[in-house]
Image (cartoon, rainbow, N blue to C red; front, side):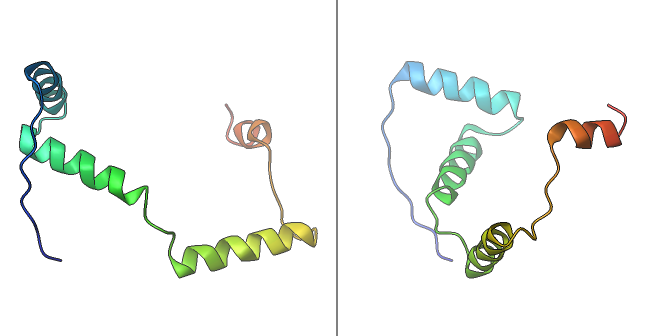
Length: 81
C-alpha cells in the first residue's frame, strides 16, 4: 500500500495536548498522529467476508436455538472471580 503526505494545521493548544499523549505512549507526535488516524480509519472499514459469514452463522444458530451462550456471572464464577 502506498503512502501519501498531507499537511494539517492545528492550534498550539491541540498540539500540546497531543504531544503529551504521545509522550505517555512513548511515541513521537508524528507516530502518535499516524497511529490514531489509522486506528480510527479502521473503524470505518467494512467487516471482512469471513467475519460476516461467521456472524451470519452465529445469528442462524441463535435463531435455531443451537447457539450456546454463558452469562458474565457464570464465566467469572467458573474462573473463581
